[in-house]
Amino acid sequence: MAVRKIIEIDESKCDGCGQCVLACAEGAIEIRDGKARIISDDLCDGLGDCLGECPQGALIIVEREAAEFDEEAVKKHLSRGARKCPSADSMVIHPMGHTRILSQGDSELTTWPIKMQLISPRASYFENARLLLAGDCTAFTFASMHSDFIKGRVVIIGCPKFDDNDAYIDKLSDILVSNDIQEISLIHMEVPCCKNLKRLVDVAIKRTSSTVPLRSYTVRRTGEIIEDTD
Image (cartoon, rainbow, N blue to C red; front, side):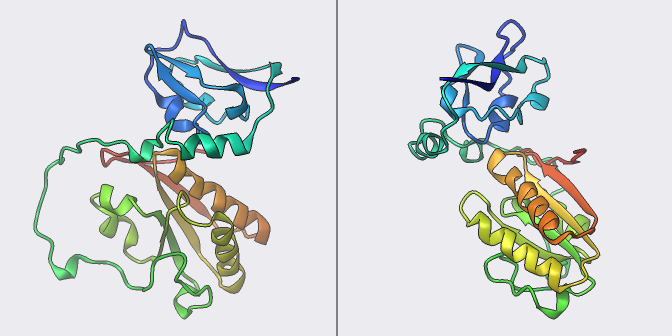
């Protein structure tokens, strides 16, 4: 085994909140006996995406002898369902009130199609457009999606968990190269698989050397939305 960077958890500080589990897309962390624990060294990439999510500061990066990060092991681990993706966790959402019957006039959607796989990067409505890229689940979770975000924007939706990520990057890059996009608003769920949308947009922007302004928002499963600060 080689010496490499890996996550270490201080159990004396850990309160078992589980935020690090949500932040680890590789599924390397689980809550066991009320504490966060690394399941296996080869599942941890050591990059530290989980560090900022711990409210107790229980996570640190150390250098020690550890098994090499194994991407194939991660895929097998997740596919076995040994660690279910948090996006599939069952939970009851209690309505926050203000329920009303929607009329046809409440829709702010002005373009079609909206699925990433179906859109044409050279559709006329992309020129000088304000772009909204949203995870598939966001509109069903955030009650004011139409009035707060869809209005005045061209909408693209997708799911990086089930769709081809490279194809997403290629299509987003094509849109940026072929059109004068004014801004991008990105809305994703709080779960790790959906957060990957931000990475795909960042890659497309970097690939095309675009200077388009990007604002990113996280929707919690309880319906609240917050603007990302990183």
